[in-house]
Amino acid sequence: MTISYATEYQVSDLGETRQVAKEIAAVLLSRRSGVILFRGPLGAGKTTLVQSICRHLGIRDTVTSPTFDLLHQYVIEELTVFHIDGYRLSDPGEWEVLDLPSQDELGFIILAEWGSILQADYPDRLEVDVELTDLSGETRRIRLQGIGPFWSHQVREWEGVHARGI
Ligand SMILES: Nc1ncnc2c1ncn2[C@@H]1O[C@H](COP(=O)(O)OP(=O)(O)OP(=O)(O)O)[C@@H](O)[C@H]1O
Ligand SMILES: [Mg+2]
Image 1 (tube, rainbow, N blue to C red):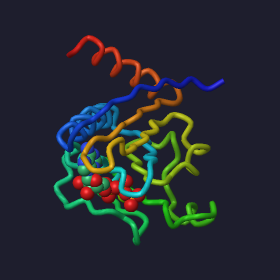
Image 2: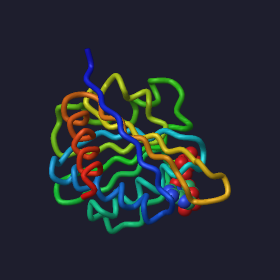
Image 3: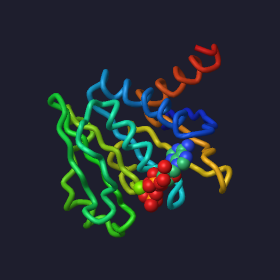
Image 4: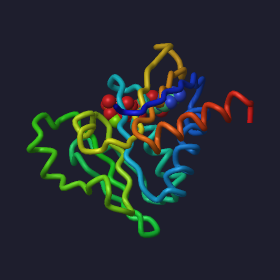
């Protein structure tokens, strides 16, 4: 049996998206590891969220979408951050070439767009669904689902904090 817990945010502009990114980055920084899979239609805001997480992690380089390179790597204070765009990767063999660290290795963060194929390799992870709720504007729905002991607990914590209006 897998433990999982989900919560949802409605964000009305980029500023609110960045607020969600800041909370995620704070947890990644204190834990010094983590795997996050981003889902959502083209243009929903996955890269935007990753860029903001990276900024809050302290990465000063410009974070661009790895649409063609598939993987961008950043190093910050002994932490290696892998930003992946799996849109063009279809079979598992292509993913293996990326040579990603396994769940129990320390000091790495994986931020993967279109990365559902990684679910089997990382039983403890955060899954983020970004969805446009208003085609003409900036409104988005961001659903956070924590899977496995650490992230399900963390998502429950976030929900509690927001419910108390902190
Ligand atoms: N609230 C918001 N949150 C995130 N992005 C927003 C928001 N409002 C507007 N945007 C804009 O929406 C666009 C989202 O593009 P982005 O590249 O992040 O999407 P994506 O989901 O990564 O797409 P792809 O599937 O092609 O990788 C950006 O131009 C961003 O500025
Ligand atoms: Mg993208």
